[in-house]
Image 1 (cartoon, one colour):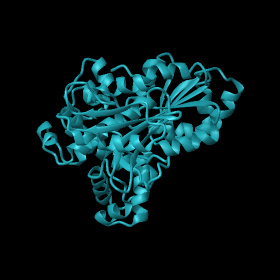
Image 2: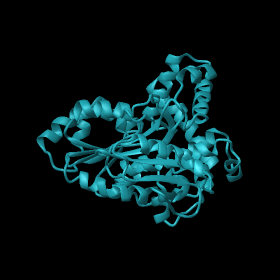
Image 3: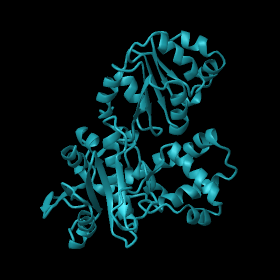
Image 4: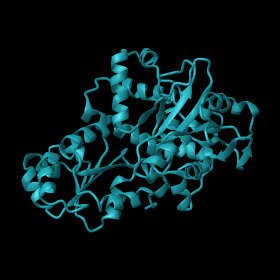
Length: 389
């Protein structure tokens, strides 16, 4: 097992709450992390049909077997359990009694909010980070990271990423999506996912996306919500502070795992990445994803935005911290160009007071310092944000 940054927060949360809920994509390492962190707790896999049937038909009898607590894996498969779990933890609020995992964030969060409000900490575990890989002695180059992504099994077991990610999509489409909604034409849905991959780092245009797939705007919105619910994609919101100019208010689309996006774009080898017309978008997805993992791995909510005005001035990533904001430009090239700093300069001029620092993450091999801007490598997202925190 590759050690996970979230483990410290998971342990800490289990000393304060009777229930800890860990959500995240399938195969992000939730089960492995929880079992390694709490090896003495009974483990219950609700994916198992007989176990799930017992939990659904006799929830009191089921939970009676785990009076001292347990790890309940994939809780969205038996959401009824949460209503019966509530009186148990109210009667005995021993910290860390139950550890729950779930892979469908909206369903899990809605059920948890209704049944366990105030009784559970909620943590999110996304796939591995560059820092976690490096700590385990794994340091692929950027193009290899863009190809393979960060699902732990690919790196733990040395799997071929193309085959592993292809299996992931097939399993996801055939099982998880059908649990959430009936989709008559799976081929059309797969086309929708692939077209989403072709729009990473771009403003979300549901009308255009639906037209390209051959579905209505309403269906496109519904299907996108499914992808969000299953931790396949996420939307980066525009910054909401008024800087006195007309600003874009549409979110941008990203994948939680950049390797999955690369697979959907047809990349099967590193050389496909290096020559891909969307390599810059994939690199941007990589960096934004690393920033999001940084927050979640510390038990915090996203504080990430982007900024763009009607004239096309843009900053790819804004990191809020209280009243302060760190603007970050993202460029995949290895040679710094003066025009890379334009968006940062325009943003800094409009913001009052000016940001305390600005940053640029690029595809080069050296950290640099330009006037008012610190230039970081792709592997430096964690130290960059450490310095800002």
